Length: 177
Image 1 (cartoon, rainbow, N blue to C red):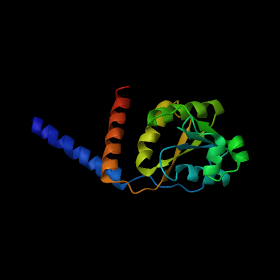
Image 2 (cartoon, rainbow, N blue to C red):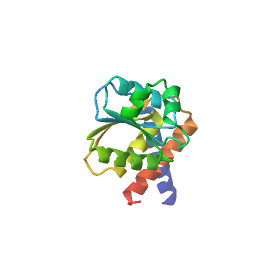
Image 3 (cartoon, helix red, strand yellow):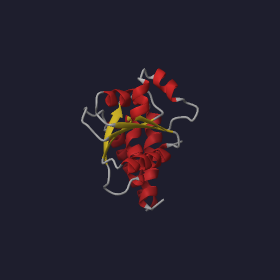
């Protein structure tokens, strides 16, 4: 009986992993949202957010998880962004240190501004867990999250590690942790 349970559990894990790895979230079109939220940590994320903000896809942008030592002028220079855009429309979130705190920081930022739609930008393999953390931190049904994944070529190790983290957070959410 225990062997069957383990076999079924392993089979379920493997099928879930195949789904997770094959159907990674994709980039989104240029549709408008109230805000853009970029989670730091991967190549192309901030570039994508700034390009969308400059094209008018949203009013404001939060970059969540910015190191406390980064100055706005340095960020503007690094991403070739006009300082005027940075000062008017981009908030540097410095509270988050991991995906869970990205969700909390983002939820507080969105609630203070009463936004109804947000475009979440992160790497494709990280999107599901990032969105889960944000949904957990937001009040039910108040904000619509639109996924905008930055494509990558993750290794099997990265995918397996992220899938396991995602499963653990789903289980924790189910039991109320």
